[in-house]
Image 1 (spheres, rainbow, N blue to C red):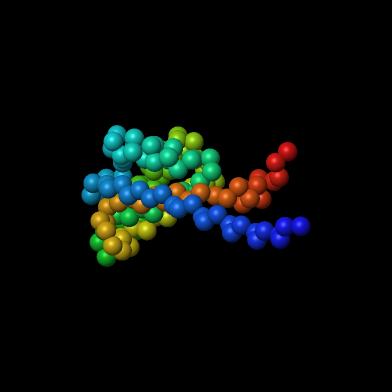
Image 2 (image 1 turned 30 degrees about the vertical axis):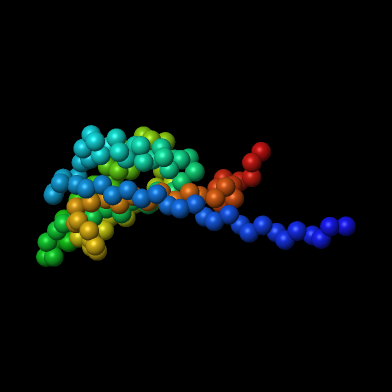
Length: 130
């Protein structure tokens, strides 16, 4: 009788895909080129099996942070519209309008991260396959 084989280690998690889209100052709209880039990104990330986190930023004055927050929300919603048109379910999109809390990088940008969802997690949420 051959010795039992050791179980295989689990596959490493798939790495996240990331995209940063620059925006013109005070502009909430995506350009045509940025829209096309975002649509290609969504397709490359497998829209049906990925979760998308959208972090939106905007430059603003310290005395009026709500202006930057509203602008960053408008940018996040513009990105969401393109993701939805690209086949991403609305339940797979997380938006965060961070206003002028820009950290490192340009204050006028949106960062999108696509992370694959394990098939087990998606079955748990939607129920077992029939």
